[in-house]
Image (cartoon, rainbow, N blue to C red; front, side, top):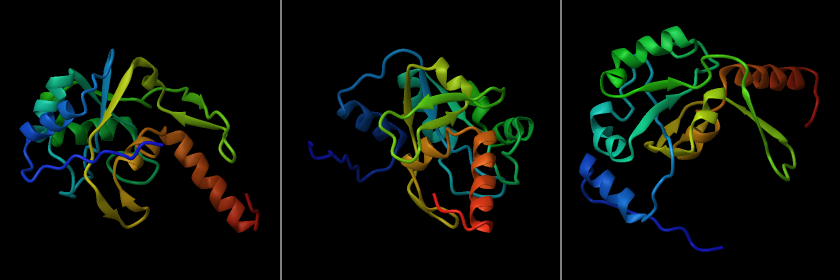
Length: 178
């Protein structure tokens, strides 16, 4: 396997985000989803929509999110859209809550040893490519947040996240392994 290339900029600017994307020398094909974390109510630890302007325009992307499975301002589409508006996302971009409507999109995981399928917001099927823009941070519930978390939990449908949580609680309470 080829070693991963890491791109670094001493100056954090929206212009340099575009330069780093161009340094990859890859063009995302088709309709592009841009996965971000729109921010929790009262939390200041998220990348602001104004900072993303250049890269989102550069790829002609649509902001995508999924609802959460825990209490808060992102656990229903209605509240999530209000938060997105309050944080300024819908002022600048088209925003798609991918799990707004049922059913979920079921993705098979080839050669999956434990997990055989994943359930994501059904609107993911409307996109050909996805650009993940995230900041790395410690997370009180999940260890670390970043690009992988954006793809795994951030694209998972809220209904599936809730079901998975109930299954884990049931297994623990009944001492079931696996």
